[in-house]
Image (cartoon, rainbow, N blue to C red; front, side, top):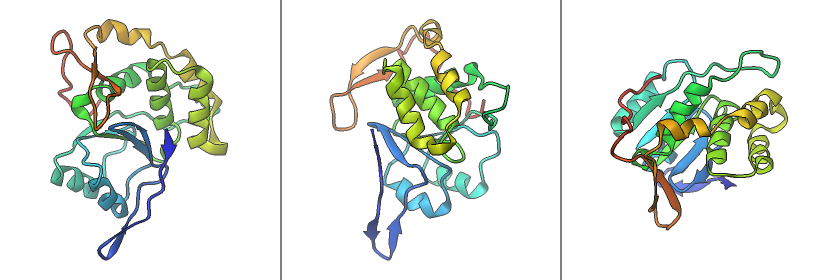
Length: 202
């Protein structure tokens, strides 16, 4: 995993990635909220899907972009929290977002919230647990993106998130060696026993 800085000249413009942009792994990206100035860069990713983690409606100019490029928008409305908030991130919502994230039929996919720090960091952290990363590495990645505004509540959520809950509803996940120019192990829904994502907002 690495941070990506892009300064690519193309015709009369510069391709500018969204704030906090990075590659999670092949076909999976993360960032803060994309602005119109980032659309040219997003076009280079050939996205199939966007996982949007905020409850607010997607701006019309962003909707126009995803519609024009046939990108499917999955919205999971997680309220923004503060470190002193007693309300936890809903585990069910994160589980549903993980189902979309690990389905390679949705790749390439971009995960984003407002700043690409807390909500996005929690989803990626839970994804890393599903990948059996050690907890110290999961926390280090989270803090790298959250910076000085990392939240203890987020780390507790990631630590206590039970990936075994996915085993019951995703028992037909199969492991396949396929991907975008590599032989890295990928996760894909089986065709039976799992309902395909049909809605774009949860």
